[in-house]
Image (cartoon, rainbow, N blue to C red; front, side, top):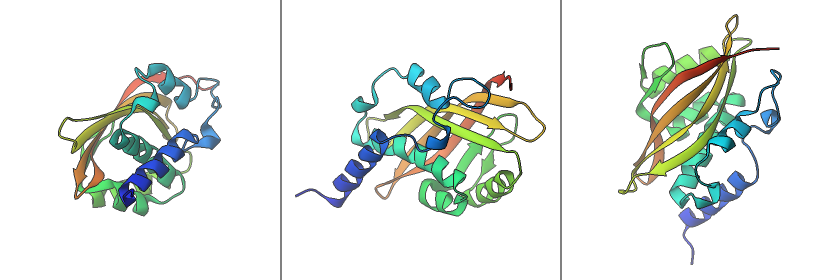
Length: 180
């Protein structure tokens, strides 16, 4: 008999294979450049079908965090996926330490008209001990009155009480994108 955790992993794998977390943005964006899904796919060094169950789960959690952000569920995102003492290191800024500080920051930032945020994981690796992992991917963002950027990110995940939680996220710029 399969455990509840096995069913959760299978359901998450089905979600992963079923399409992007951000289907409204899946095609070419308004700049005429490639979508993040296309860019991430070009950078993959192994097929997603080769990910372990834990790697699939984290890959899906990466996509679910974006889905929560885009639907305005920042509180849910923070409670489900972000550890209490998590650190986010945005490009050009100081580290923000703590889930509660991040909650306030993201709510204020995402409430700003004209903010664009999109990201797509490229790959995930779980360490040999099975309790620590990292994901890396591509991120696209724009703040009002500023250029749009394409960047890369790394997220560090730690298994706490059998559950994967994001502990660190760092982003930086690859280049400024030309808007048409």
